[in-house]
Image (tube, rainbow, N blue to C red; front, side, top):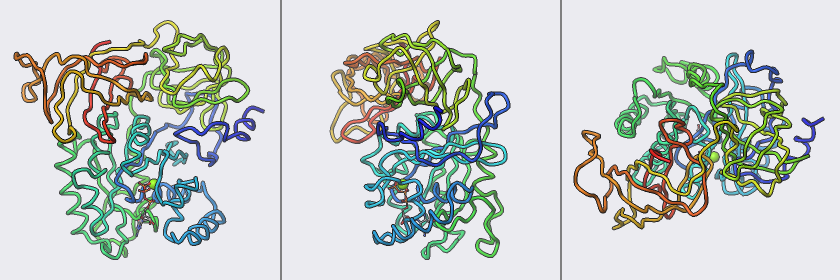
Length: 462
Ligand code: GTP
Ligand code: MG
């Protein structure tokens, strides 16, 4: 039984995005058409905002974790002198994460409501792990931005250089079009469900969200919660706790998010996040375009290896086919595990993804390191879908006037913070990218240097 095989060997490889060993509530239907709708939700926000705690609580409330396990975590947390962290242990499963109280790898888990299957991606908030956050956010349809209302904590996250800001900007660039902003720790003694604090945070966040490109009226929603005590998550917060809140709880808000339109008939594209050996070669990733069926012939790009699909798994369940938006494990024949790298793309044969060492892109410069200017020769790390690769700007082609959005006449040799510029980007290894206008998920990227996001961009020519 292949299902058991997969479960029996969870540690064959340690992927950056690991599957937590929490089984789904129900078996999925075999056929795409009568499946529940599915959404990928990424939890983002500053370190210690309560992302893992809230994620853990959601799993507990939705029946994915039993009381006994919670008690075990309570004891373990106490032994580590981290009493209040037991809920986070549901998502933070490795020892380093539990000892330090910080998520490192993107935690992954599943839960369901009446109408929707959710995949939760619990991103790390610490600035050292932003590349992992990028990988999590690039797989998401909707973001839950967790903000701590505790005195001083909102302020630190919102400062320049705080991850509340960086995560919002990254999320927008990476295609997270909808945001639920949860103002967390409302139970904290410094907050005590005060409406003033909630309003203060909302009013400071709105201009920033607008500036980051979100349509606050249409695509953003705020709500107060306590991840730790589980208030306003599965059911609306009791009036005796919070008299002024008349809005929805988090589950209601998540259920109301529309599933983005996805074309199951488009050319197949699945960026590979990880791979391991298990009765053949198994690759993991999210389908961005098209569908895949058992028996399909595909290409592993950029190497053009011809492969056959032996089996397709959604979570732990084998399915005959799967469509866009699904997180899959696909067992392949015709390729060795060693010949695949994360960042490769599983692609249809008829219309394969382009493989390039150079492309043209429109970049927006966010914040360069002290005194740096952005010019030909500038080097950075490129993050595009599941690719992380050194790159160099080889030529600045045109500067774009941010007001008119039109190219400026003057020849451009260098630009500074805030500029929008079209340039040629070179990478040393062949990578798979698409024009943003054709395949947005494979055409949007970020540039980072020394642990900071310096620019965001779109591929305009390949
Ligand atoms: P990173 O993964 O490191 O980015 O942190 P995180 O956002 O996942 O935060 P985590 O869930 O690990 O929680 C950090 C601390 O905040 C822990 O001590 C939690 O108990 C505490 N905390 C989280 N949510 C709440 C809440 O709703 N109320 C209170 N009072 N404390 C909370
Ligand atoms: Mg965490």
